[in-house]
Image 1 (cartoon, rainbow over the protein chains, first blue to last red):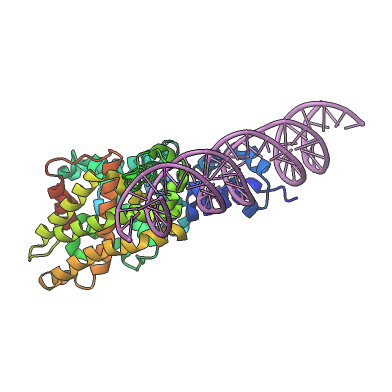
Image 2: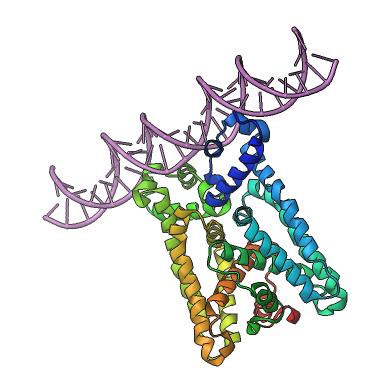
Length: 192
Length: 192
DNA sequence: GCCAGTCTATACCAAAAGGTATAGACTCAA
DNA sequence: TTGAGTCTATACCTTTTGGTATAGACTGGC
């Protein structure tokens, strides 16, 4: 029996199946069969189906948050910071579409307690990245002050909405895609 | 036995449970128990669990689309049309939060074939409403021409993102909420 | 009274769900 | 060599899943 990498292969398979069908629609047996192991192996590593989901999230979220944080660092230029943020996000969406798809499907169930317990802490950190950006830009952009939370909320929704359209193919990432989305976000719909 | 309204009560219960837990997480037995009927009753009216979902969507989508269409009618004033659209949407979100929550949870699974077969036709009509608006505004707003599809796609995502934030309580609908969101959408983030 | 159609409950089905008891194979330190 | 710890498979558990065969109750028209 292949004894190396079973944990990582389970994580990979689970992410893919969860992203395609939704967490609740995938059975642990299906994950094990697709990976080529049996259920005790899965339960040895993750303890439960929920534990498997937690491990899947833990595997990619830190990287995503780090990249968003780095990309959105405010250095006195809001357009530059937003461009960095959008670039980091769209790059991540292109690199790890399965993880983003899973993320979006979990976020869309805000009243499922079990799911929310898993996704909320990560979503909170996501929002904090955006909040930090607007707070850092506050001194030089006084008209944003007091609206940081609203702006972060709307921006997070916008990023996720773009990601969904990219994932289902109804939106294409052209050369100036980031440029246009940042401009539209900052100055409205007339700048396309 | 209560013999009147069982069909409507099943629709109501199913919508509520689907919205809370997600379509896949709810069993037909659970729906029947919560409604106070037995499974043959459900299968008599809807044929299958998928048929029940189809009926749930059919029950509310026409009303939603009609209200969006009416609210967004273009009469030579884009701000007015967008205000009408946003108002119609946010009113609907407030009136039928369960239906909107279900809608969002289904949309977030773009690669689940069974789910997409059910939701796509309605989503297409949703998008067509927005597309019509931008096409009607084209002659007086030449800089929008050629971007109608992109604008409709982004606007649909934005509306759904706001709805999600309203549903999970991270956003509050203040007096000038519609005014501010329309302004921000048209002129950027500096107008709050 | 009777019949057709509509609606519902009892009781059941095979399959799949999440999860586990047990034991065998393997590695590594002592 | 032995023993502890790690990892995996066989075989099994209970509960729930979506779905149904059958039959009874009710309605309306004739």
